[in-house]
Image (cartoon, rainbow, N blue to C red; front, side, top):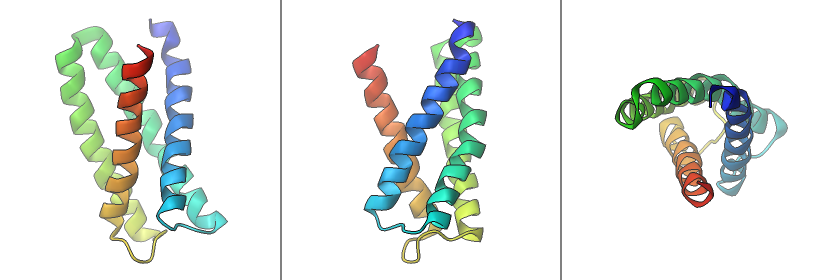
Length: 118
């Protein structure tokens, strides 16, 4: 199972970038710089949370994984909101609302994908 961690990390990052990039486009984010910001924000945060939740789940079980996942997702939401506040990519949305929309969409999509495929 630990051997699958790099593949899991790559899958999660790619899906997150595709989902959050698509949601950003849908809600009106335009321009290469803004879309690159959304991508880079996820390149920073996603590789931190995915192995953490994976390893906690592997070593400590589902309940510990869920606690770490919730705390991690809240942390990522705040961190990304702070980044979007410094580098605004959407002129009309509050950066934390923007972060919540993108992260909510990717988290829920990941949940549905995991439910369907496992």
